[in-house]
Amino acid sequence: MPSKLSMEDRILALKLRRLEQLNEKLKESLKKDRIPASRAAALIIETSQDISDPLVPSVWHLPPEQNRYRVYHELCNRPTLAGCCTVV
Image (spheres, rainbow, N blue to C red):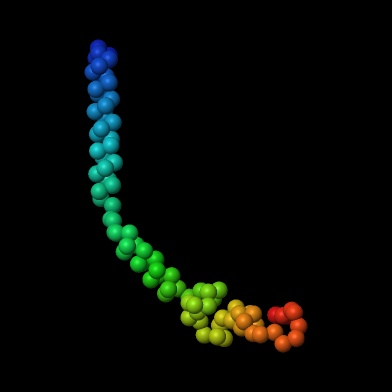
């Protein structure tokens, strides 16, 4: 910038530069792929139901012999006979 510009011209030039930068950011934002929130939520639910988790019984997709937490879960849900403790 030449130094002979008035203060008002410098302010206007600065405002123009900031607007151009904002315009570039908005253009970059428009290039991003977007999906609706409902679709994103459906994808999360689908993924969480497909992944086997040995700690969550409702999504156990493992064979019983491969699930090391199955025995503990069965012991916890078994009615106790006479004692107060369960040894695992």
